[in-house]
Image (tube, rainbow, N blue to C red; front, side):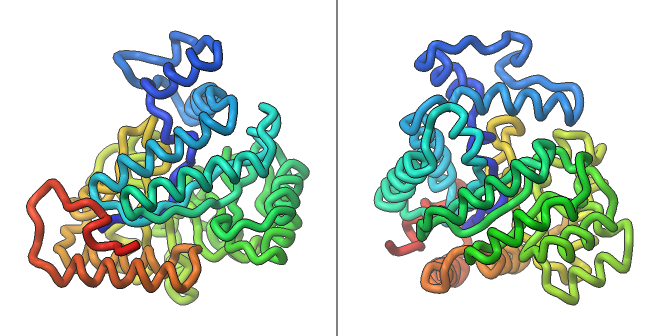
Length: 340
């Protein structure tokens, strides 16, 4: 029973879907973006450029609905019960898709996937760090201007190396005052102190990535004491070259310190990741048995930004799953255990 709490909605677009949406929108994708059926980039800056090129194929609300539904259907098929998408609505506004139309499209995907597969999903509105604090404030004002029960969070994504984290405090204050839960990418491309700084400056509920935390014992202790969860994306960390091998990944130290952890696919269209794969990698790195994987899912439910009634349903589904005899692969669909 998997949860995916760190996934960029347009980062779920794989090459075949990108080509299909591009043809539909009469767009031409640069052939240099692809090699042997995969996206190509050389470093993190190149990855961000590739991401922007792929994200641009979403030209209308119908495209957005198709992208969301496609990922939810695929995730549910292998046992995922809950997804929190990240999306920067101002990007789509520039394509002429109003925020209300974006939410209507996503709501249609959410309702259809719940009805067909029993999977729940929510939205974290994001601002993009390398676009600067003023753009972040505008994103926060947009997120707070239109209340929707499935819009549950506000986050900071993009190039962590740009600007200082305190520059984004006004945007996060607006989002927090609107009742949104808060997360931000930190401790991925900057060191461990950036994690504590982000939590304190932005008053975060959880941290996107945070994998550099073990570099500083005081940061580890800070996160564990405050029960600040980390959104760990193992496939992404390896694909972006942050660690040379699976054996080098710091997840074992993070779990051993008692820090709550949830797993995420980050950009599965680019990294070939899936919730099932992330759990499998976590099990391999940390030598987790069934109870260890259950702990991760339970922590993920507590770290999620959905309402308590939904959390209760997720807990019930998880309990039924782990109380049942172990399954051989493939896993049962989430709908088997998560009653709608």
